[in-house]
Image 1: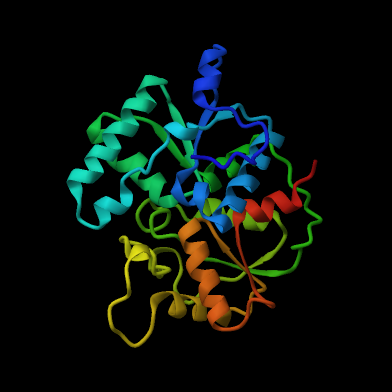
Image 2 (image 1 turned 60 degrees about the vertical axis):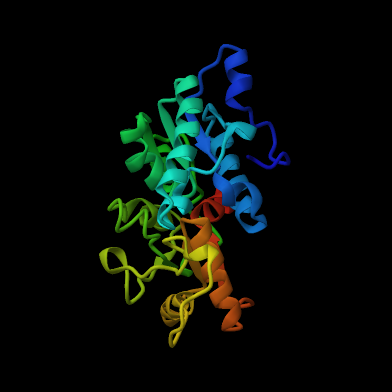
Length: 266
């Protein structure tokens, strides 16, 4: 699926043809492949992988949707069809380890593919980046432009509450020497951005306030200059919320990979 403007990224087919087995497969995901804002996250993460000398590949045109939206919308049959197709491709390449920038893909590949025959080690990109830094393979300049700046982190539902990963993204923010400011609802009590459960693809039900506006208000209440996210869907919803509040000139919404890519010590 990956956009062809990303430099020198090999597909599994190309690596296999050359007799090479990559350390990890980067699952790009639908948003990271086709959504313009999310493509920037994809490119930032690829830059970090390349500069850390990680051997990785993508599936390219062989990657298709994990089936997460279909499952959340109640179409189990379609989900199993999509999952089975992907598992056949992944197992055909004998993939062992997968990293993805999308918590929806992360959760589906990690927790729902095993029962259909897809057994893989699956990591969210914040987990993998944290590992690379701890191993000394990726170096971040501590004298960054973010030093002392207030950054708040929005916990994606499928990373936090669904998979209990709260510390990796926060550890990365602290590597920037920024001031991490928590929202009113965070970690185990985090609030959805409004895109989960296939809500991204349908109109909101009638109510007093849209969920992404409520979450954006919580983020703005921290007086942070940056709202950090770890999910392309959360990024979109929060960005739209900031725009709704006419704060886009004062508050940036960025994925953690984008923050690290801008401050990397090369």
